[in-house]
Image (cartoon, rainbow, N blue to C red; front, side, top):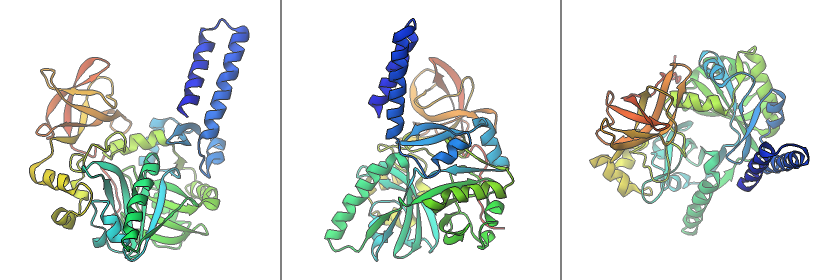
Length: 414
């Protein structure tokens, strides 16, 4: 993939530097060929043609061709999600189920959550850890029953996650452990988010959604299809993630848009990123990586009480020590002046000493100001702490602030 994109870049440069004529035509042919080849390598969701027909601007993302935006701007899409609603295609993410009488103890050897303590039909954010306590990936894990666990992992982490889970499962099975898995490649995943999410979805199901709370999970009929429904999302708004058989995904998307009378709009990855940043949610690969622990990432709350006492997951010795003594770095929210800081922008003290790094940043469409997340030395993480962020070689005033930047609206009951 990278090689093909490099070819396209070279062709562009050749066309730009050429005086025209045959050289330019040749460069354009090379560019078109490279672009077509690169596009052919990308996987496409069941809604790909639907996106294109609705003006979706398709871009490569984690090996998939995904819409970054539609006809409206990323700013307008972000604001519409908060005011009305958004429909996202997140089928590039990987859903899987673990089955067996020992599915829970197996999964608990790999994640920090107290899965056993979850009530049937409820879930929680968790983190897969390595033997050094670093985050392999974050995931929403749902206890369907004692013998069925459903989870969704990030698209960019799919291959390493499945290899990691698979290797440990094989070892677990060889010791007589009763667990097996099913990867839901036959399903698509839609995320319906915003204040109109519940009333719009209610038109398409007999299930009383007012009795389904944040992180609840049900297997129900929606628009005539058997769906896995989780009341969750990645925007800070109330909403749902709907796992639907791929052959029914387009019909469901059409029905949701129609029932909202145009107020819920198709929304791409661009607005999804600004929405999750406003909600203070981590993006794996930016705000969480294999060398960052859940404690450093501010996710100690996701480590179950029993797990804090007993450990029993990879890297538990490192994580439990950090819980007791404190980590050396901490994730913080940041307001800043000047141009918006971006990933890898340096954070410095008033004297110019390096004290951290921005991991995500941008302009908040809702707050109309710069927001960012990053890591700073422990002790400099308290709200109100002032420092500088370096953007394009210049230092700008910044201050630590509490997250989320925009208040969350998760549905926890009437």
